Image (cartoon, rainbow, N blue to C red; front, top):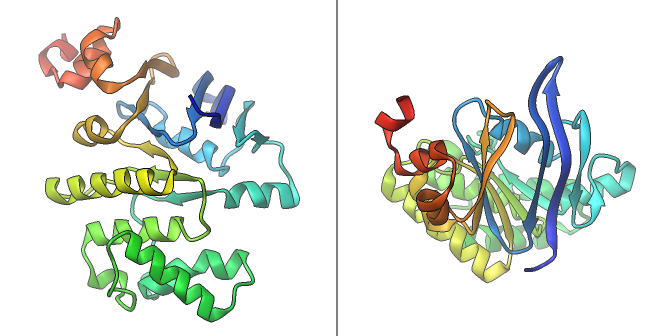
Length: 253
């Protein structure tokens, strides 16, 4: 197994006096497609916000490529933040900007690359996600799936080693969702990137994941970890098997 890209140690996350996740530990290995899943309200989004540095944990630490994201300050924190990219659930593209302008934002903010160089890089990133020829289109002029692809292109602008994707298939039809799954697999293979993906879409989970962790709000933590096919058939926790098998009767019993 390759070195850890992310290591979470004894992380506790809470809002005010309400604990969402308590003392959780896991590792994401370099090159993995790693899925965070679970039922509604289990803390998936909360965990993601901590992993990308939006919120500090109330306890524990998060190591990104061996450096502590929680305690990093100044230039060290800036460097860590630039080592990963984020695609938010809605895409979070600026509607008043063309696709190439959206993708250029991280490059303009964090580099001194001249305009011509930025344009070249942005065209390359859009081409990687299948949007060559759409550089001057605005988000309102393209489909939901294309907006997700453009958001991934922007997340890759600074050549990060890690990509965080929040519900990439949300709101997409099954065919578009399957196409996005294939894009993720292709990027992981070609660019040797590490993906951390929050999703509850079972079809995507079974197609793309190397390993998953499953959160449960009842224990405020991780109740299962492994490959989805193995968890589906062999997990000792019946609720996990029921989740993967979509067994509504048993889950309600």
